[in-house]
Image (cartoon, rainbow, N blue to C red; front, side, top):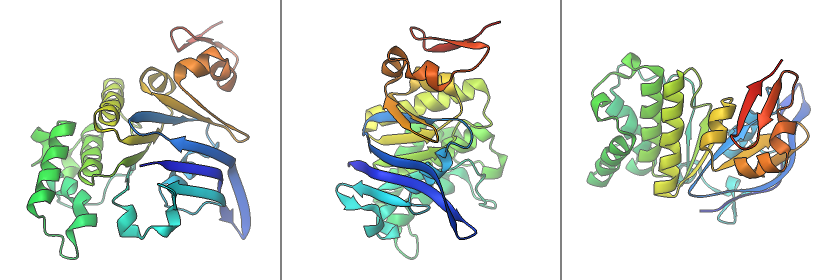
Length: 257
């Protein structure tokens, strides 16, 4: 499935005034690819992600799924194409992890939400792919942040969407869990040919794991592979600052002084 952005501008309304945070974005989200959205605070990463996920409307331009405008899809149909994983703790009461994963099947199960054989198979596949078999009977409120994020990713996989958006999926995780999470998402993108697009502040991890980067600032968007953006000087310019230097070969920043 192709997802194209044509001259897209994002933002929001405050007191009857339009506040634009990103302008004139023309790009394509690529299948089979882990794409990381990076940028300083206030650059509009969350606004862009929410717009791409149809949580809020675009100010201008078009978002096209296989050539069809995003707004042309009914909500239930769009949920078969786009899954989203947020950082907020889900308010699910005493629900077990397996039950939360099964909620990913809601676009397919109809009014009563009864799981058919194919729905249960999708849940089992998602649990296996993410490797959370030992968590399935745990109550969600007993899970660690990393465990809960894995369950939410399994829920998105059970939804069987070709596109998955994630908002800061490594926030509040310890370093080993951050690495594990990004490697998992990259594996899922590659092996299942999904479009996986996430926002993150974990710059160096994104440089080491992402297939493509979107570098968003208030005035522009740069897109490319980490190595290409390093070689053409975009990365050191984008993240320039006193006391740091960038090594294009190792794709790492170093503190100096």
